Length: 269
Image (cartoon, rainbow, N blue to C red; front, side, top):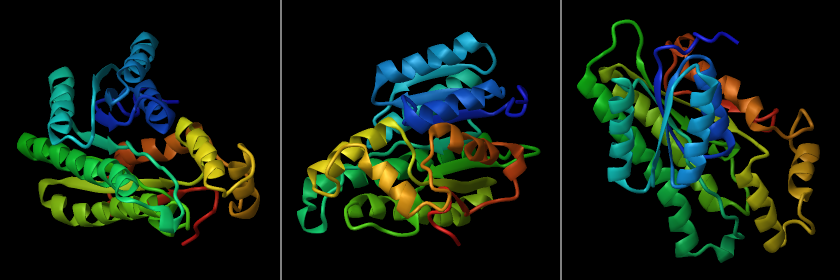
């Protein structure tokens, strides 16, 4: 690993207390990036920041971030700038899921998922872009906004329709945001994981049993691996972080409006 590959990258990451957000933060910092970690789980992001700062390459700061609040998103951007001087990358990672069968979807279920995954992503993108625009174009590289999509940015399953809708929104904001923001030298891209063994999926596995999709906990990931994933195995955050780092790096400068699938071959294009 090159400890200087991401040197000079000042990155805001939402949903950074655990799972892919935390793994990405530590991976970016190990390559020289500075990271501002936001999450509603304050103890979690403080712990991730502690590990990064003790490792001694890139630096980390943390704050409580409720992505459904525009003010909180603006505060996360401001903290990134206060700590590191500028913000040049924003990773919109925060997200939740709560499966329901189609006829059982209610307003609370819909609103909870869409508010965090879609509205929260929009607010984060807008506040990051507002600051990047105010800073003026960088001399050699574009600013970067990165949205975390999903396999359900390209399809939908009968038991996670609000989540699917929210991740279609992530794709729409990648494409529309890329067109809207290039005049300010901001690219917008994303990556789409499939079945990733994180705390979110551990809870999802329990919820799928509750709604009758599976008989026992632990079956969902193995079932999907055997029946839908070409590589016949589910993934872990470490399988995703390399693609995220590529999008953060200068190597992806001539890309915008793209969603990269990293799902073991669940969705092929």
